[in-house]
Picture 1: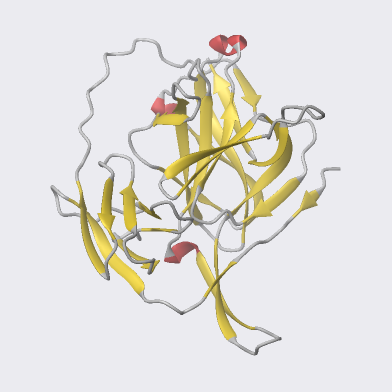
Picture 2: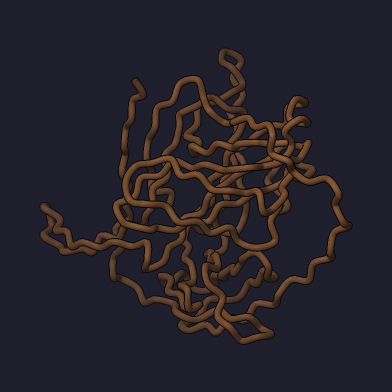
Amino acid sequence: MIERIFLILVFITFSVSAQIKGAVKDSLSGKPIPYVNIWVQNENIGSTTEENGTFFINATPKGKKLIFSTLGFEKKIIKASAFLDVKLKPMAYNLDEVVISKSIGTKKIEIGRTNTEIFQAFDNGPKIDTKFFPYISSYKRTKYLKQVSIYTDSRIENAIIKIHFYAVDSDGFPGEELLDKDFVVTVKKGTRMNRFDLMEFDLKFPKSGLFVGFEKLMIEKNKTEKTVTDLNTNIIQIQKTYFPFVLYNYVERDFLYTFSGGKWSRKTKEKDSDSLDKMMINEPVINLILTN
C-alpha cells in the first residue's frame, strides 16, 4: 500500500506593510496580460497577475526591484513603487523550418515513476520546483512528449497552475523554455493525478535531458482565507492559502534546481568522504508519457 503523508504548510500574512499594486499590459495592443510572474529580486517573495492583468504584492525594503516575466514577452526589471503600470514588449520569434517528422502515436512509455512512492503535499509558495528527466538512448523510439501528469491536492474546484518545460543549458541548469507561450492547466478538487495532453506542441525529448517544473499562481481564484487567533497573544491574523498543493516524493538525487527571486539555484550534497554523493530531496510527482 502506498503511504500518503500530507504536510500542509501555509503562509500567514500580516497586515504590517503597505502593498504594491498595479497592472501589466501588452506594450503594443494595450491588452492586459494574465498570469505574469512577479518576483522580488533575490527574495522569496512573489505574486501573479490576475486574468485582467492587475496584481498586488507586499511592500519590500527600499531599493528593491521587481522582475516581471511570462512566456511570449520580454522580461522587465523595474524599481518597486506604490503603483506600477507595467508594459511588456511581445517577443519576436523566428519561424522554425518545416518539420516533416510528426508523431504517429503507435507506441508509448511512461517515465518518471519511482520505486518507493511516499507522497507529501507542500505549499511551495512563490517559486518554481522542477523534476529532471535524463535522456536515455532508447527514447529515440518514443521521442515525442505525449502527456504530462502531476499529482495535486486541492481544496477548491478548478485551481490553476503553470507547467514549464526547460532544455538543459551548457552549465546543466534549466535553460530555454521549450514552449513559446504559457501552459496553464486546471486541476480538480481533491487528491488526484492530473493528466494533460501535449500532442499539439510536437515536443521532442531533448538529448541533453529535460526539466519539467510547476509554478503556483498567487491569484484570487486560487486563494482561500480564514481568520485565526494566536492562543498566546490573542492577536487575530488572516491566514491565506493558495491551491493547489503539489505532492512530492522523497527520493535520492544528485541535485535540485529551484527558481526563486528571479534566478535559478542549484543544491547539491556537500562532499563527505563517508557518504554517498547523492542526497535525499523532495521532488514533485511529475511523470511523462512518451510516444513515437
